[in-house]
Image (cartoon, rainbow, N blue to C red; front, side, top):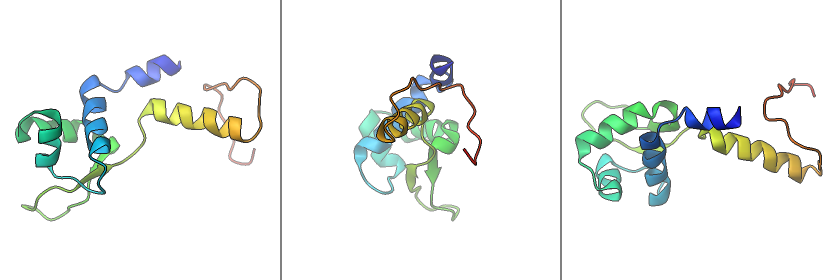
Length: 105
């Protein structure tokens, strides 16, 4: 199951999210991302839109330069976060990534 979840995010979305992360700022422009990826602004704009909740534009005013930030974690990041949390809690048992956890557990 874990492989299928990670595969549901396209390579271009992952590349775009990683480019924003690599820039290391708390808000980057489409131009910054374009330079990082070596692509034109139109392509980057489409990629950011395709990234959905994984990238967010914090600029809400029309006609203003975008201010792109990292949004939701990519699926493989969520899985690694769950494994890390289990290890930190001292749990040595195998982590079942498909298991649903109830909120009061």
